[in-house]
Image (cartoon, rainbow, N blue to C red; front, side, top):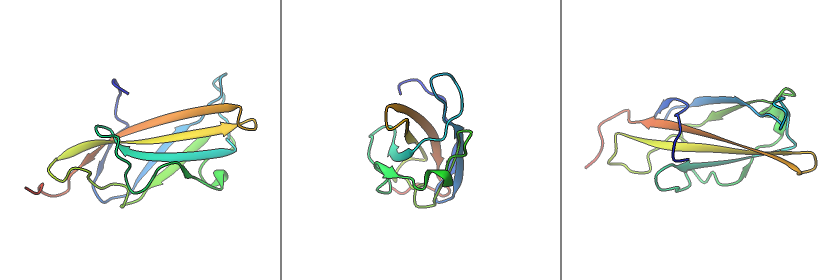
Amino acid sequence: MDDYTPWGSVIEGTTAEIKFTIKDQDGNGVQPTTLRLDLYDYKTEKVLNSRLNVSLTPVSTYVTSGGICTFNLTAADDVFYNSALRQETHVAKFTATWSTGTKVAKHLVPFILRRDSEPTA
């Protein structure tokens, strides 16, 4: 992910909604049978809020039959890894599988986390 466009920005300690479409190889929206989440700091790749390979179940809670995925970050997800920074980039990585696991899609959602107060020394 050397070259990317951030999805948006989030103020630390707030909730935010991530929305995107999971598509098959033909570009059609698809509801996967499994959906997993990783949340990490872009620069260090350090896992945030213990969100490593988290199973999002039931899938129908997060993804419609047309493949539209909606996920709400919690306030605990939106915390700084480096307390000295004013902003840092985090990544939510979604891994979806269907067709008994033979089809896989990965969706990276980088976002800028912004400080709500002054950084600590």
